[in-house]
Picture 1 (spheres, rainbow over the protein chains, first blue to last red):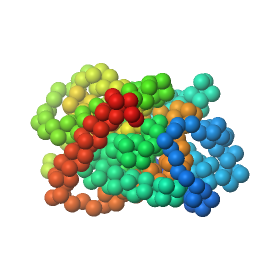
Picture 2 (picture 1 turned 90 degrees about the horizontal axis):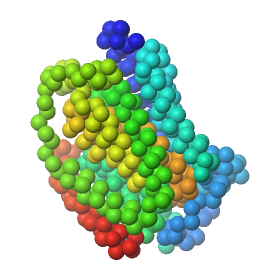
Picture 3 (picture 1 turned 135 degrees about the vertical axis):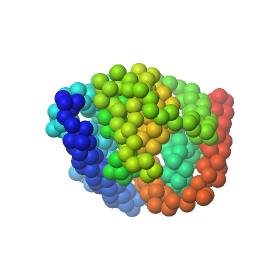
Picture 4 (picture 1 turned 60 degrees about the vertical axis):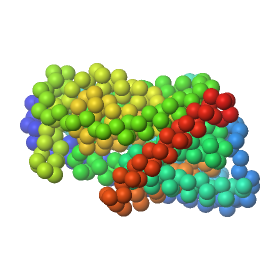
Length: 135
Length: 279
């Protein structure tokens, strides 16, 4: 348990975890912004002169609604698919952050926080992977 | 308007929203949805989807900087994220069944209320509170570097009340595609008596995870349109990065006042449009 360890010790590991998390978040956001930008260029070069209309909600085509579908779009080099991949990377960034924290708390042998973090991770994964197919 | 012009204008609008949001500390997310729906005539569901994505970007970008300064408390964050992610999941499901006019009305109320919260003077910090048994058991108490006093420690209070408020903050975030940082800070600062600097940075740290929980539902429901989300995300991100680099302390007070007024006006407009059924 963390309580049995000295405060200085725990704070040091927390600090280390925070450093890694900071780098991870920055890398995730930069990478996704880059992918979105590239996808945006492809999309604008091809469809820039079409009329823009977002007044009526149609919902996205099924290929842009799931991880598998987005990958399919990317492989056929569709601009909108590449943008959506960048957005998926962005959504995945906090998820990876939480997953990393599971490891971090396990390293500190803080079982209570490993459990809390696993609960959060389960909710996130359910939303990303399960919520779509369940409905 | 063709796609190229539309993209350029939305990018510019999002850049300004991100810049003002970061300079004033009020967050750019709250003005994005009204901007897109009222001025660009975008359906509110697409607007919410694009806004939510940009919230993840700015929160993660800002958290990367804060977390290294040692202000945010990752235990408080992780514990409360159980509440915010559950709330966000519920909010995102609600968003798909609530009529869009009702969404606009709720949005209007939240806008006006968050402007009010940002104008309200901060309550005097209560120092040296006794440790709360539940907070101690959960290991929430912590310390942070204070420029005047060196390392300052704090004892977290009223855990159940804070947890409940956080569930509400998550639900609002999932329902409206906003970060709901104002409610998160309210829960930590007012209810749990966590020092303001720790509350704001930890809240920022939590916003990305909260938003990611509803993003999955939004994606599978087709709310996230790449053509719209692209300029919004890139604009807000660029704006908030620039904003975090220029620190004009003297101007911030006026800027906050003006931005709060803009938020109130947008809120009233959303309320009116929602009530009149014209969103």
